[in-house]
Image (cartoon, rainbow, N blue to C red; front, side):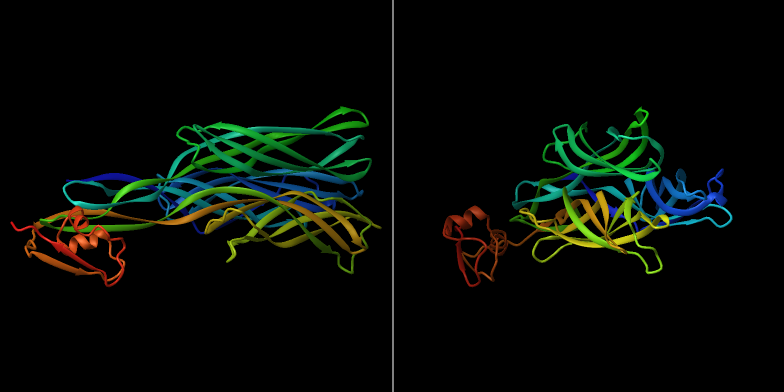
Length: 496
C-alpha cells in the first residue's frame, strides 16, 4: 500500500580554519653576502587531502621565492620548496569527499646569523558528504497529494592536469632570473553529457636581470579543456579547483636576443553536482482507517554553479619620509589577492571586499629598494540573473603594474579575476513513516457542512468530511483551492 524509496542527498561541510607555521632555513647560502632583501613571495598549494573520522589530513608544499641584493649590489633570486602537513579537525568521516584551500596569511625573512624563511598558512578543509533517507514516494488505496522537492547530489569527481606554455622575445641578454610567479583563475566550467568544458587563465610574472637592470615580463595563457567525467549531464553544475602544479622558465634564443619561455602544469580537481526534482507524497488519508504519519525535515544547500568576471582597481603605496624619492619602478615580483567578505546586498548585487598585497621593487638615488604594500578593495557586480543567497568567492591578480606618481607616492593599477560560486538553501520535507491504525468511525449523516478557516486544501476538506475528493468535487464543482475563510461546503451522502 505504501512504497518508500531510499534517496541520497549531498551536504557541504567546511571545518573551522586551521593554522600552520612553516619555517625553512635553506642550506648553502652565504648570509653575510645578503645586503638587502627586496622581496619574499610565498605560495602554498595542497598536494593531497584524506578524510578520517574526526579530521582531514592535509599535505602541501610551500614555495619561497627570495629576491635580494648582494654586497656588490647585484640582484639575485633563490627558490626553495618546503613540504608540510596539518590535521584539520572537524566533523569529518572517512567516506567524505574532501578538498582543501590554503592561504598564506603572513610571511617573514630573517638574515641575522642565518637565513630563515617563514610563513603562516591558513588551511580550510571542506567535505561533501552523502546522506541517505527513506521517503514515501507511492501510495495506493488512499487519497494523497504529491509534490516535487529538490535534492542536491554529488555526481562525480575527477583529478587531472593540463599543460601550459608561452614564450616572449626579450631583445637582449638575460643574465639571471630572479623569480617566477604564477596565478590561475577558472573562467568557465560547463557540464556536458559525459564531460566538462573548462576555460582557465594562467597568469605569470617573470622577474629577471637584463643589462644590469631588474625587469619584468607578464604572460597570459588561455587554456581550453574538454574533460571526460562519467555520469555528468549538461544540466549539472561544476566546481573546479585549479592550482599551478609546477612551472619553470626556459631561456632560449641567441646571444643578446634571448627568448623567455614559461612552461608547466595546472592541477585540476573537477566536481560535478546535481539538484534534481524528485516526486514524493506530501500528505494522505484513508476513509476507513486511522493513519499516523511521521514527517522529517533536513536542511541542505544546492550548488548553483560558478561565474567569472574581471574588475580593475587602483591603489596608492606611500614611501616614508625617511626614504629617498622613487625614480622608477622596476618590478612587482608577485601579487596576491585575498577576500575577506562576499555577500549579496538588498539590491541583488554581489559585493566583494578584500585586499591585494605585493612587493614593489623600485630605483632611487641609492640603487634598488623595495616596499611592501596592501591595497584594500570593495567592488560590486550587477547581474541580469540574481545571485544566489550564499556566495563563496575566489580571486586572483591577473595583472598588476605601478608607476611613480610623485616622489614618494606610487600608483598601482590592478586587474582582478573573480570567481563567484553560488549556493541556495533548500529544506527537504517528506513522510518518513506511515502507520495504519484501527478502523475509524464512519460519518453516516445524510448532510455535512464544512466552513473553511482559510487556506484550506482539498485534503483538509476530505479529512473533515470523511469523503473522497472526486465525490466532494462532483457536488461542489465551483470550489477553488485554497479555500477562503468562511466558504461553506455542503456534502450529501447517499443513503445506505
